[in-house]
Length: 108
Length: 112
Image (tube, rainbow over all chains, first blue to last red; front, side, top):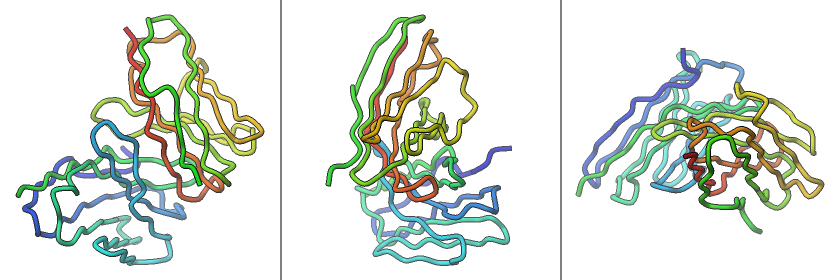
């Protein structure tokens, strides 16, 4: 199966919270990452979490890590139209393995 | 501090030709990784260079090759281009092989 799996689509209303979920396979990953990609652009590092943490908060972003279930989530509070993009979860053990990406659509 | 820059931004090549893509790493970074992102998919790891040596390779054929230079910039070479090589090629640099990677804007390669 795939190393990293994500649901493909998420649609929310402006001002709501968005939660993007990810499952991964490699329990030895030191870091887990969230990247954002806007149309026609490269990947922008949003945040990352060290594998011995279970939560990290950075302004509107909250990352939750459940190592037992190998589940990672990204919560975006007060989602704005500018948050519309594709979000990738990735695990890193010298080579970074990405999910297929979740396309977040924010409706006014 | 400059970020990761890639050139060219767009490129059209004919099947069977060869192509070279270039990447300048972020200042202070000694590790460069290359990824292929096909339309609608996540990036796939091609290979990584650390201090001018290949430091890992994904599931790509030998016609995908690379170099890293003493200033830590890098090249990706693809020989005998196939139609399926059409993709966005992303370069990422990092302080070390296992730390967070910062991506360039990519080179969009179209093979016709």
